[in-house]
Length: 178
Image (cartoon, rainbow, N blue to C red; front, side):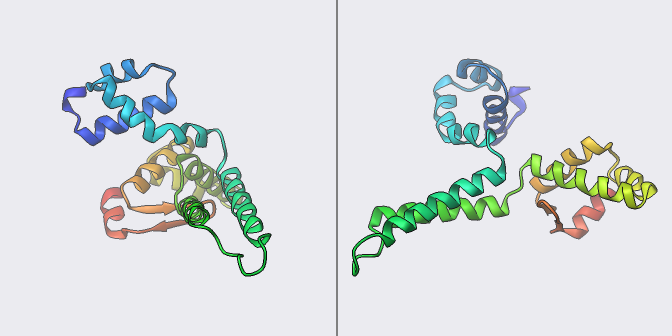
């Protein structure tokens, strides 16, 4: 299987194993068909992702906002006339702000699952038949619906957040469903 994968697919497969399985980098390299050095280089990019899996999206947003607030209070506590960020503080602020923007825009599989589960739960209370139709429409059971929505988001067909699903490419989505 590893021989048939493109380089970016190998990297994504390795990333999934790194994040989800408790195996060594050498084992990942052997399965994916790359060197351990390559996996080690990739793993440096993914270290923060492992930590992010331990926090919910809300916890990450709250933590980032707290850090921004602390930075702002530190700047505000400087003497008058010097209440502006240093180059390092400005860089930290840019990074924290970029992290917040990404958190507000990106939806994880867990987020998509929660939205689709909430949608189906709500719809089930309103109209059981329609809830079944929606699951049937996607051709999946309720848990699988979340996975299908995640795939559609990865393909750029839609964006799902906690309360909304935004269709980006309606024509492609319709063709996919038909």
